[in-house]
Image (cartoon, rainbow, N blue to C red; front, side, top):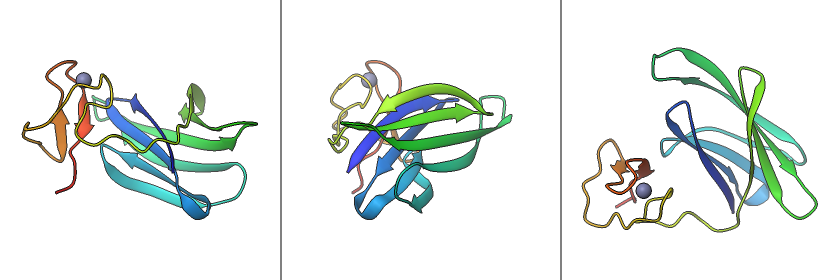
Length: 125
Ligand SMILES: [Zn+2]
């Protein structure tokens, strides 16, 4: 599985390229869209920002020469391009700074990192 994650409009967005060409999107740890497709595939979701203003977020999965990439567009404008890594996300550490989150209590399936203040999905129990 290939994974790329970033923070968009105050949400944790994770793009996954799974087996059998399945591509999926997770927002704050929950799967919100998925599609199978060979070649360039795009997934579109609605995402609200801090002021509850809705935005159209499009994630385009592309295969490069040596890697898979995702392009993220908000309301039609490209805001970020990420290279997907083959490592599955490490459970129990902050995905932003690597701080150990063991023993911290999750809130709404998320743990806030005491080191950098950002949110990571809580490990499933
Ligand atoms: Zn952190």
